[in-house]
Image 1 (cartoon, rainbow, N blue to C red):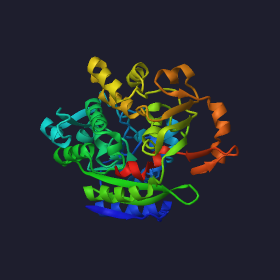
Image 2: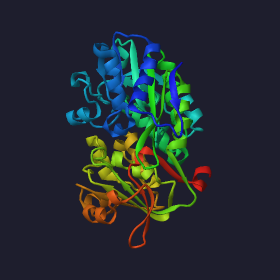
Image 3: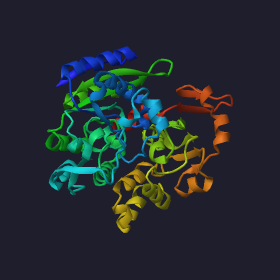
Image 4: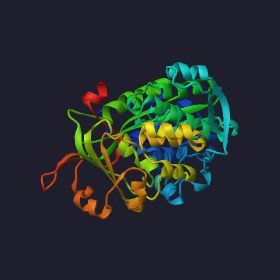
Amino acid sequence: MIYFGTGSEKAVLSSDDLKNGLFTALEKIGRRKKVLVIPPDFTRYHSRAGELTGYIYKYYGKNISDILPALGTHSPMTESEIDTMFPGVPKNLFRVHDWINDVVTAGVVPGEYISEITGGKLSYSWPAQINKLLKNGGHDLILSVGQVVPHEVTGMANYTKNILVGTGGSEGINKSHFLGAVYGIEKLLGKPDNPVRQLLNYAAAKYLSDLPIVYVLTVIGRDETGKLVARGLYIGDNPDVFKLASDLSLKVNFTVLDKPLQKVVVYLDAGEYKSTWLGNKSIYRTRMAMADNGELIVLAPGLKEFGEDKEIDRLIRKYGYRGTPATLKALQENQELQNNLSAAAHLIHGSSEGRFNITYCPGHLSREEIESVGFRYGDFNEMIKKYNPEKLKEGINILPDGEEIYYISNPATGLWSTKERLYE
């Protein structure tokens, strides 16, 4: 059922609009005694999910027993991040998702189904893992809050991904990420229907139907000045709510270009992007727009590590972003990669496959560290003078020396492609 839905390419939903739409849906859902809220973490700060979680708290008050940020493999939120993203919400309500130790398996998707949706490329079974709080917490309402936007693993983010990946376990996350890598990132990006999404939806319908999950989905775009605004809000408990949000997201988050881009400069906010595990969105979201032999420059003042998880960080440092053939060879020869398929998938996704150059300009990592994983190194302090975000506008910029660049202030808010690559 869809409890509330509104949005368009030109809509600008105010805070009151979001609150009123949410309250309209919650009135239809009815009063509940024990509510679990699953918002994203700080890496999705611009989703407006923090604001909506605050409204949910105002509505249900003491009947909210738990707030479980959908960390997936990310680091736990800090107190400062919680204060910034969820102002006014009591910190004692927040729980930390442990993707190694805090999960239960709701069911197992058979290998025959995996083989069917991947055209025989993979045939392993897949565990539908979720945080034990969902299964055993005794909640009479679970509100999954987040943003629908193009995504490198599931085609479009959120919906069942927020549950089965955001609160998922190591095996489920690893295998779903690897499935996406094998299928191909450029065939996935911006596609609401694909093998990874089919897997997640199948598992949710078959193994999670007993859970009282309602999805609260936003669509965020940019206005004429480049400011992020809410374009849509959709609330419901079935696939239709995801389809509505996806359809709008593809209209407001997808930039289709007439020709490939020779030089792209992406800025990564220091508070959101501290690792290449997250920062490589700059690669994922622009790769279909990059010209052969072009250059992607990533300004990353907060970059201090490769993986947020210590083991993934170690694997990235060891194997690097060397492209699909090298990664698959390493996977075949090394048990540690076989045991961490999400890391292997990430290494594939983070490579340009030698087609274009990637220059990372980190705030904290050294030249040796950046170059050791296969990227070019750029001095952040020098590059920020040449490509000053305060002086750049979204899109095409002509610099004083005549150089033409394409500037993106936050890669997580969109997807860029040429017409040729989009429809090939």
